[in-house]
Image (cartoon, rainbow, N blue to C red):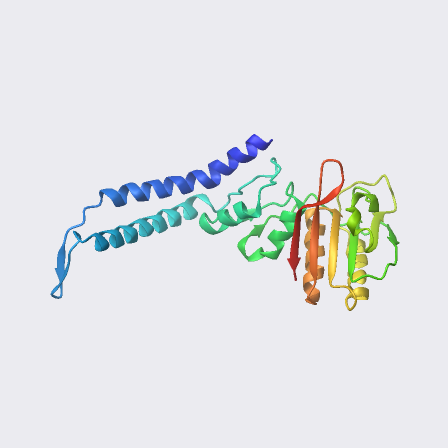
Length: 263
């Protein structure tokens, strides 16, 4: 799986960039520079500074032309990392693909939750392909546990599909107020878009918007739900900081890989 991921990354990101740069260098290096005179001003390409400047101009002009051609004919319907491969690559790679090569389409299925939130936070650089496999379901009921601690930071644990417990979060955070949301039906693990869940989260934000500005998010949720969670925090525009924690293979959340977003 990892080999496929890096192979796709090289094929669709690094290889085109290398080819464009290499071709631009070759053409620039074989370009013949001849001295000429315009309006009584003589430009002498034998002067080292003039030669370097003109070659740089030629190089970047060629690079821009090749980039424009690539974007026009190769980037229109391309996804950098398809959903058949787990796209746990740094956000920088997706950003470079969108800016340099114009690859803006991205399906957030099979992408880490931290990456999903970074994409939502920089949505102007991307065109998100919605996962149509996730249906709306308003019949799902939830159980809410709240330790009622008085802190200005809230741990928000959301177990949608998989159940989640306070034992899965870092020990140092367990003294914060912790709100745990799990499905009432323990056996229901279907991926759904739940209006009821978003309503619960919205109420939590509204009830605590004066006393709480920092939320630690521990999520077992799908991309559509994550986008709605992000938008719910961002819509309030009340100076929130949300920290999204990464879950490892042992179903334990950890500080490593944590993403912090100020909204």
